[in-house]
Image (cartoon, rainbow, N blue to C red; front, side, top):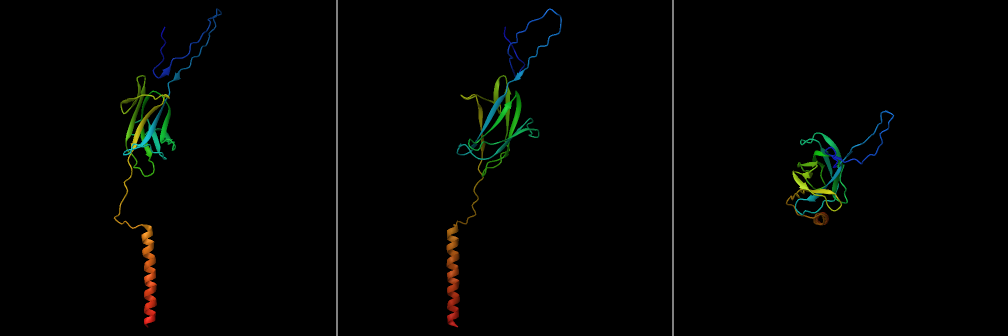
Length: 179
């Protein structure tokens, strides 16, 4: 006999019991255990594709407008990841709340769907790795360097200031001797 559980729940363990002849009610309790999934988002640089190991935060929402926050997760700075833990079957939306230093805050919303057919990110199935972990990448774009057109270094500015002070002092001494 093949046993089935409700969608999103594991098949419970068998319970052995004996029916008594004393016609008293007997209570048997069976608890459903939901199937829970962890999903890890790996933050990468849009251009270099390298993992961004920095501080950032993501929110997990129940609506695609990202107004109903379920959980907020800070990054693991050593790995450049955030992990949404113990997700039940359903559809969720992930959005960046704070970006890594020197990166633009993304307005991209990622749809995550978990069901009996698998785990899907933006309607594309992702498979678990050898550690049974579900992972997907999220790209961030660097904030461009702003060039002002002035290319003086601090050393050059200090040198110019010192030379200016020396020339002004020499000019003052020359004018005093001339009088």
